[in-house]
Length: 149
Image (cartoon, rainbow, N blue to C red; front, side, top):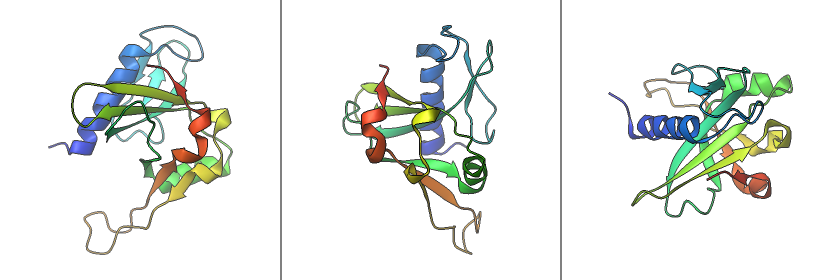
């Protein structure tokens, strides 16, 4: 059974795929969801191969991008950062109440290591003990986020 965060993430991915054109080739309806647990990317353009990460969250006001948003696994993200590989990021802000939403975009070339903050590894009693995630610090790049819808 999917968690609330997984459901929110899936909604975000579907919204971006349905509403956004590919930033590289500019074609509409070519962004497709990748399989769950695909490392560091959620969408691919089935025309040009563009890859992107999507993060979705529930907020009080979607017109204001969140200051932080949970990322995924730190290990694969850190490996790519060490190789200077960054994926473009879509942030989907969904209203906690009502149907308001907003989609923001941060291109890969505007990302810097400082926005990626490793979280503490999960404790020994956790189901996935030792797993470590990270947080995107979007407050540091708010002026670089492009509102798409």
